[in-house]
Structure formats: C-alpha cells, structure tokens
Image 1 (cartoon, rainbow, N blue to C red):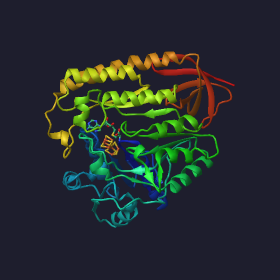
Image 2 (cartoon, rainbow, N blue to C red):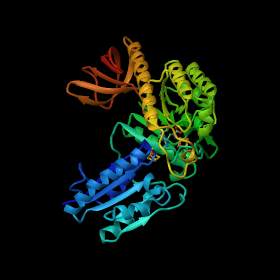
Image 3 (spheres, rainbow, N blue to C red):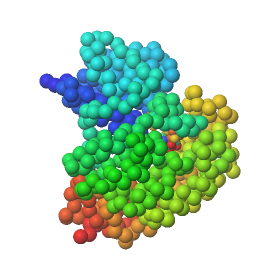
Image 4 (tube, rainbow, N blue to C red):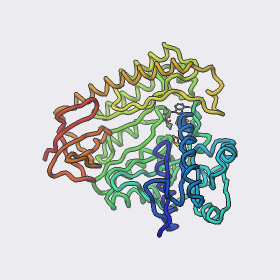
Length: 432
Ligand code: SAH
Ligand code: SF4
Ligand code: F3S
C-alpha cells in the first residue's frame, strides 16, 4: 500500500502555494495525499506567525498530532514555514515538542526530500537557513484545484512596516524572471485553469530583466484563452497609474484590487512606517476608480496599533465609509517579537475588541448596500463549485454568487443576472 501524507496549511495564499510545492515533492517520492492526519505516514504543518493567535492555534493542533504519533510511532511529523523561521523559534519548538521529526524554514522547503531521507531512517532534522539562496525554480507542484491557480511572481519584502514579522521570516525582495512566470501562466491556461492569481508581498515592486509589474501584466494578458488574472498584494505607496491603465485596457485583467489601508490616521500610518497619508491613499483610490469605474476593492485594516486613540480610529472609519470596500479583512494588532511596534506603548485589549466590533458593523452595512446595488446587474461569473442544484461562483471583483442555470458548468464562465441580495451574498440566474 502507498505511503500517505497530510499537510496542514496556515496563513496566506503564499503559504497555500508553498504547500502545493511540498505536496509536489511528496508525490514525487511516491506518497499519496490522505484526507486526515491521523493515519498518515507523514504530517507537515506549514505555519504562519503573522499574529499571536495564529501561533497559539498551531501549538494547540500540534498537541493533537502528538497524541496521533503516540498511537502511530512510525509517523513522521514536520513543521515548516514562517513560525519556525523566527529567530530562536526552531530550538524552542524542539524543546516544547520533542516528538517533531523535521523542522525547516521558509528558505529551504525545496530540501524536503533530503529531510525525509533522514527521518525515514529515524534521524531528527532541524535546518533553518538564515538567508534565501535566490529563487528555486522547477519544483514539482501538486495543485489543490483545477480552476484557480496561484503563481509566485516575487518573494520577500523590503518594507519593514513597524508591526510586521514578514520581512524577518521571508527575507528580502526577489523577483522571478518574466519568462519563467510567462511559461507557468501559459501552461496553466492551456491546461484549463480559468483564474490565475499572481502572488507577492508587494507585487508593485516586481522588477526583473528590465520588466516592471505593469509590463509583466501586459505581457501575461496577451496569452490566448478564456481566463482572468488577479494579483495580491499591492502596497498603496507603490501602485502606479501605469498598472491601473494596463488593467483598464486588457480584457483578461480582473477589475479587482486589494489595497491594504491598515489605518486612516496619518499619525498612526507614520508610526507604522507605511509611507503614505490617508489623503494620498484616497487619491490612489480616486485614480483607480477613474480608470475602472466598476472596480471591486478590498482591504486589510488593523485596529489597536500602539497609541491608537479614539480620534485615530474614527479617521479609519471615515476612510472605510469613503472608499466602500466590497471586502474588508480586519485584524486586532498583535505584538510580534523583534518588530519596532512591539516595544511601543500598547492599547488595552478591551479597547481593541470594542473597535474591531465597530469596524465590522460599519463594513457589514456597507457590504450589504453594495450587494443591494448589484440587483438587476449582469456579471461574468467563474463557477467554481456546486451545492445541491445551485452553482457557486465569483465575479471578477471576488463577490460570491449563488446561481441557477441549465447551461452552466463548474470550471466555466457564465453570465449571471443578480436577482436577490442576502446580506452580502448575491443570488442570481444564468442569462444567455
Ligand atoms: N504584504 C501585505 C500583507 C501581508 S500580512 C501588505 O503589505 O498589505 C496580511 C495582513 O495582516 C496585513 O495587511 C495586516 O493588516 C495584518 N497584519 C500584519 N502584521 C500584523 C500584526 N502584527 N498584528 C495584526 N495584524 C497584522
Ligand atoms: Fe508586512 Fe508591510 Fe511587507 Fe506587507 S508590506 S508584508 S505589511 S512589512
Ligand atoms: Fe503569510 Fe503568515 Fe507568513 S501571513 S507570509 S504565512 S507569517
């Protein structure tokens, strides 16, 4: 019987895609994916440390794996990703969870096969690389789906926002060559993928072989086929008119931009080292809306950053009201060791909770009114699932749509007229 593996992924899409590479390496070694960790021969936790809650959750789940390994001592347990890459974290993890067989970081996941060689012979491995070794091309990838695909265009981050652990655990910015990206995207489209999401911590600083992000988008969207291209994440200081203008001209580029604001207070933005003011952010939004009147905007916002006052928070609410995001991801600021904000004066947790509740309430009513405005409109929807007799899909601005239709198929585009809005959920019928 084939040996089995299970990968539990935490964190962002970057991590989800890296798990697809781990899956690729395991499949090449003859392992078969299992649907639960309990009876797997190899269990890997691909971790995140963006907030303390992520780490607490992972440590809790490792406790469950410890029990599974007691019942099945031949199980190989591996932990990798951003959490293990933090300074001193691997040693601490080894002490706390001695049952773990392999600990590796974000710069050496391509070495998994050699770590398994050792672990299959009963050896423990801890291998954290302080620095990346450039970009590892050509790794096998076993994709989680066959409709939507993730493609890295760059790795790392140079921005050092004062609250953020990412630059410490993902290293400096480095971009893949336009030729390698083009080849990946072309082959995905030719094998039937309909949505390609380009990934980077700050896609607007993409730069390689004299090609910038706007030129990369322009080239990729020349590929023939039926598909749309999205990208994550844009930094408001770097998104340029050149990029937005390309999006407005090329039909394959989705009218959707995720533009994290973080805070609407200039004083807090300065302390965060974000390098823009609320006014500059709003000017970018206006520029985007002038090129793409139907654009879907989404955003990340953090509440309770050190020293944030009621007045600062109200400024955040004001920006949210002005922009009207279709999706908003809100977070409570979490202290991260080694970042400048960790030693700034902190806001009490009760105040943070009260603020996030108000932000969520405000967004709820905005998302509802945006959804209500969609009634009667016709959208192109990528159908990515089915539930009973209903199709489930998304618009190019990432709005979820539930619809009926006799010609629609999972994995294909349909034209859908919105007939009803249930909170922010859109309900519709296929039109021909
Ligand atoms: N590169 C992206 C975001 C990466 S992290 C960008 O610059 O926008 C995703 C989101 O997590 C961030 O946008 C931020 O809102 C949130 N985040 C990052 N560090 C955090 C922290 N210490 N506490 C709470 N939220 C945090
Ligand atoms: Fe973190 Fe800022 Fe880099 Fe985004 S841009 S990953 S928030 S440091
Ligand atoms: Fe992503 Fe979490 Fe790392 S958000 S980059 S997996 S710290």
